[in-house]
Length: 451
DNA sequence: ATAGGGTTAG
Picture 1: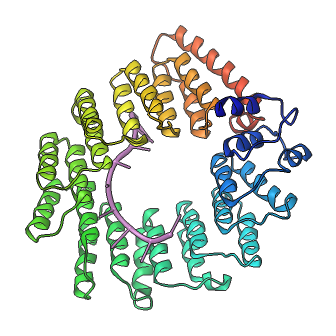
Picture 2: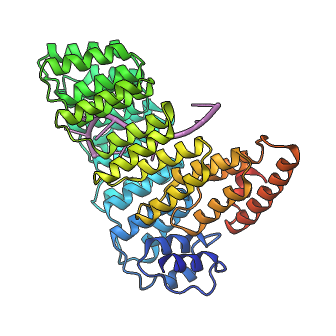
Picture 3: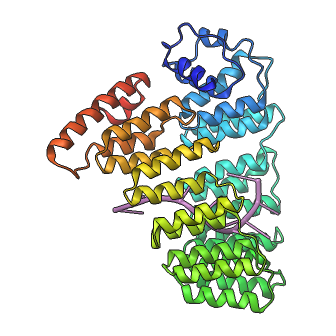
């Protein structure tokens, strides 16, 4: 029912014959996307009676995540045309995130200033968002500067925000920069276990386990107690760096020292051995885990199923999947994605499709990864009809095609795996379909790819 | 949004 309504809103001519949308974020997002230029009087009329709440606004913003300019238009529209509604801090944070991802810094800063004038922020979270954008777009120095200047925007630095900026730098692989800042300011902020864990994890992320061990040692020397998170981080680091023997010894040491090793420890080892192709040891550790009374989580099963797909056989992965279901676990979107990928990788497309149907029947919505991965496999095998079928299905559901989807489809046009004739026919079908869809999308695709 | 485990293929 909901889907039918969404579809009718999507396919109606832009701006014409639109009924007021209910407080349904999916319907509102589709309505916004149906406007090719700016939101106009028609939209004002359509949303006059909509009961706006921060939750509703946030849902709409999240649905428009891959259509950033539209999302910002919507945010500003509410600010300007519904004067009785005032945005919540969480909505500002989302809008700031979107503007920062689009690198529209004047908008980022005007939103920050507006937050301040409304006395609802900016909060440390707001700064974390902006810093993360700076760090991941090659501007770690601007991220650091932002942290150092936070207080000028009414937001004082504390240990938590210090730990956050270090984590942001580490997660975007700017570990040297994080380490520098850490050494300069650890005294001023009284670095704690979390601070050290962030730095240990940073070195592990770039596979520099000797540096991670050095920080671990330093931590102990300074009287900061490592905890299970520290050890699990280090263990994961060894696996990531391909140091399987060291990982195993570290794991044994953890047990010898009576660490209360937990589900995260075991999942790390199951995954680590599996990725290294040591399926037998993966099984042994999984059995040991159950023997020791540590309950596997859905993540443990996901790790196991994934490595069975990659390093063993997809049939064994299916067995493990059925076992987890039998034991009462509820597979999540990751579980399905991993197994569907395994089936597709093995060329078992129809079984992959069946599993997708099953996930939907179970109420687990396919996401971008599900669709994009399936479309990629179909495109690579010149299964044009199948790829387009999924693309169409995306367009009518809650998970709209994003830029990656278009990229996958377009690169699919250039794949040559079958006879030249098939490729030409496939290309024509793709080109025709993409042009048709782009005309519905208001020219976004045309501008992006100059088709 | 102060820290640790599970999602692409190349």
